[in-house]
Image 1: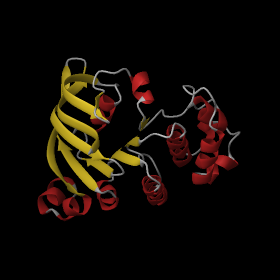
Image 2: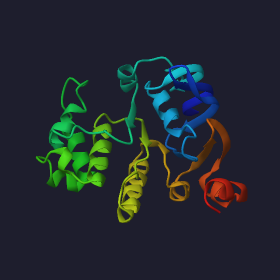
Image 3: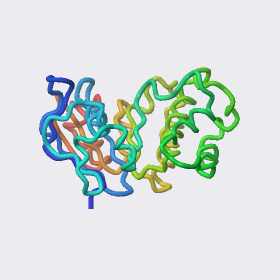
Image 4: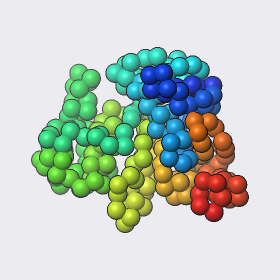
Length: 234
């Protein structure tokens, strides 16, 4: 049974339609990646799921509940975690303060989850009193993911987690995402580093011009000659 299912989704911004008849599903425990050229609508899919883009038509079902027209703050309560590509931490607050703010909806602060975040990202533990804006780009991405994990989401939505990272840090970031999925968190990721993302994921979707083009296992998409020529640089 699908944890998250999208059918015939039309969405965009205001009156501008970006997505047309998008179909997508993510099963419990899966690691799914959305790839495609710039402007394909990949990030719009993510933003529509979490209520930050304009829903127009179709269905978005999470745990068999229709969430298509919920407000973003209500979607958080449903157990979805979302890490946007940029502006995903509070730069003037410390690492510790960011983690505390991430769980403002809870009655009690989950100390054990904070420790789990520090165990997963030791560099954050070493910089807990440092302002987030003084962290490197990779460290800020770790903090953004840590903030999302503080609410123990059933699914983690990641929008371009490797964007802006130095090449030698990209593999490390993917390794950390692998580990999050291996620990039991379902992952849906948008990623420009298509070859590496497809190599690591269970299944992938290729979007172009706001429409579904291909869907298959990650390895199968990597080996598909049409996909390679059109979207992966041969």
